[in-house]
Length: 246
Ligand SMILES: Nc1ncnc2c1ncn2[C@@H]1O[C@H](COP(=O)(O)OP(=O)(O)OP(=O)(O)O)[C@@H](O)[C@H]1O
Ligand SMILES: [Mg+2]
Image (cartoon, rainbow, N blue to C red; front, side, top):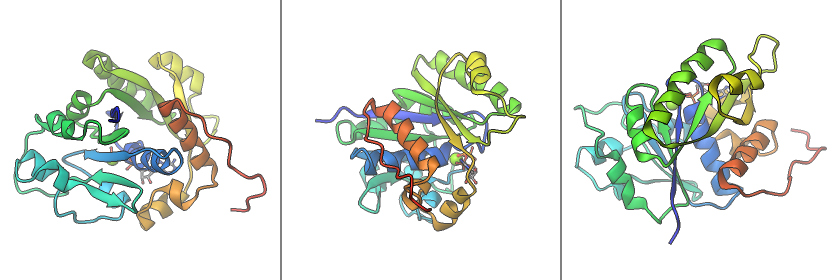
């Protein structure tokens, strides 16, 4: 039986890249590391994980599960025979409590190597903090995001869950950006990965496929592989070719 590790991808700041990181880290863990992976949308009021993965109107979602209408196994969707995901409803006719989220995920114990939870930036983040074994904090290198991340870090510390580290997203290497060291000193945790800004992310959104699958040789994919190495503790041989033209 597998030891399932549940990792929450969190930030109390919206729009910093939680969903992008959930889908791309998941894709890399499955494709490059051969892991069995489930992604779960826990952004209950403004979900969009499914849209990153080609599903616009899922029939059975985490909302139906939390509402007691369906078993969680029936909400599992397959992405290209590579990994699984559980979407959330963009619109659900009634408010559902997420108190049972953690216990619902327990049904998957031993079935996956990794469950990645795409958290909400709102107070719904508590469902992710409750269900996860460990957390990755996503942020970008600007002052408002880093200062908001102090609250994210404090919330995690209060939850007594393990904070694996920081994922610095949309880095442009511009002089106005906060430096990695300044961010680490402010928050007291290490940056595990520095993910560059790449406009091709918008092509990936339009194609509804993770960037790392569309652009397997790009720098951003290389960085996602490095992040997956941190998460798994496993190393892969370097595969990027110098001469690759794309
Ligand atoms: N490295 C990147 N380079 C360029 N654009 C990016 C990068 N990462 C994410 N984005 C873009 O930033 C936007 C927000 O990303 P995403 O939806 O993943 O954030 P989020 O934290 O999940 O947002 P929310 O808090 O609303 O759930 C998207 O348009 C995405 O394509
Ligand atoms: Mg999101």
